[in-house]
Image 1 (tube, helix red, strand yellow):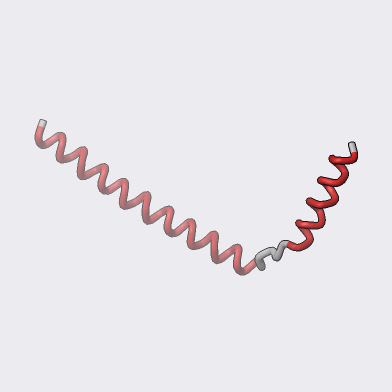
Image 2: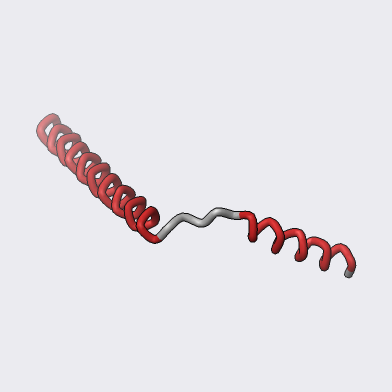
Length: 59
């Protein structure tokens, strides 16, 4: 039981040292992720459409 308490105390101490990002940083990061995910999805969708059309044309 002593090891569990020690672990919890050390974990709490480490979490107090963490520098958490500001709200603005988080919002900007989320925007970047959403935009890049959408762009990649569109590119992959267009490539898939081209490949399927090419296969339908060949076969």
